Length: 265
Image 1 (spheres, rainbow, N blue to C red):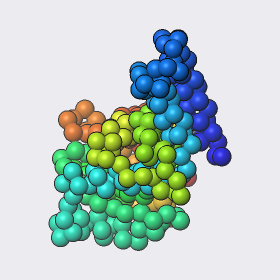
Image 2: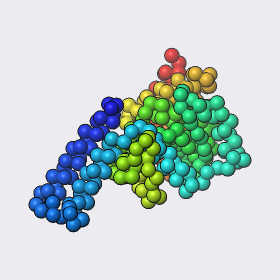
Image 3: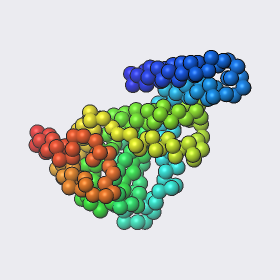
């Protein structure tokens, strides 16, 4: 069992123990109520959900992420292939669909939001509001940063935590490397948990470094990531700027300074 999975499991066991204990304290006749579908049964069922979510495999986590992404794409306004946004993104990412041992897919969400995100299945979504703001080199820097979150396992850990928080029984109880099909209501709740969470400062810093290395690897303009952070800093107080790179710390201005220093090394 991987270290992060083991940590989540230990946390889940603790939560499950507390849930189970509270059920016993509030209802001394637990055995009788459980047989009749009482409140205690619901509490114990929640504890079981936590445990199952904690032990779900990496492949099941990725499968759940893919299900959510497909669900979210249907309710989002995805740019058609012939749009200027989709064509621009396709041009920039054509040689990165198989990147660093990963199979990735890229799409544009037509929205004024200055945003981009990635999920554990390798899906990267870029908002047209961000594309309007960024030059090609800046956009590539942001894309490299998002790819870093996938490669470094940040999105995997985030998705596992979301599964644990939502305690989605069907997703957690599946086997053979695939999560069971989830209902739209379950996917909606799971997605809310997923995108309301934030990466840690260390995860953001690691992805910044990966993004810069990505720029150097392909001989892109290494000043692109610094410039992207400058623009994000300038837009940080404006409505519609939702990117996790802005909501986490250090602030984008300091991150831009760090990227400038590292690019000059």
